[in-house]
Image (spheres, rainbow, N blue to C red):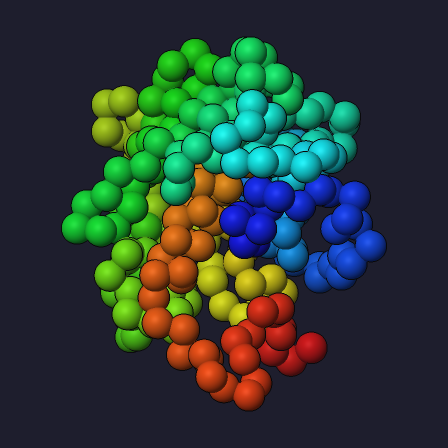
Amino acid sequence: MRLRSCLVLAAPLLLGCRLSHQVPIEPGVNFAAHAEHARLVIDRLPGGGAGEVTPPGWFHWPGSASPTLVLTEKNGSVTGLWLTAPATVEARAGTSGTAPRAGLVEPSWEDNAIRLTLRTAAEDKIQTDVFARQATGGGPLALSRVAQSILDVRGVYRAALRDAKGAEAGWLRVRISPYQESMRIYDGLLPAAVGPALAAAAAVALASEIDWIEDHALDVYRGSSGGPVRESIPLGR
């Protein structure tokens, strides 16, 4: 999901070009999502249900009061998501800037490796560890802005979620590879305080950070006649 493209595109323009891959949901997770063109398909939301994150159904101009993205759940609920800076997302219960806040995601960095702080509507605070690479070999040991090339960004990254006392309360993961059902797959076991709006906002924040890292890393495909891999190519399919 290239979030920068979502800033100016209207959702109706995207509907005609959607091609879906079935992305299996692993047992034991209460949140699952995957990138699909300029949208984020929410396969499972905390508490049940599903939906998608898309640009709003009108043109969004940077600096405007309208949300950058909209979470539309299958039950009809709509949440506005304002991406105000890389990995910084405010969720509101509606598409008005005056609607009640449903959550906030704020980033911080440790040696260029991101942590996310999730703030619920009740001001409960949940913080991730850094997103550590789950298999050694190739690229930094965490999802980090020190990646030298876009190939360094590929991998599986997992971060524990911690409550205000520092106790582990769940986890969040992202898998980045062109050789799976989606270029980016997100899932996790989120604590009860994290509702659908904040869960979606966390995935959008993480996607935004990955976009930033890839945009500032060497594109090894530049100048290649084949060009970069822009869509997933699941192995064995």
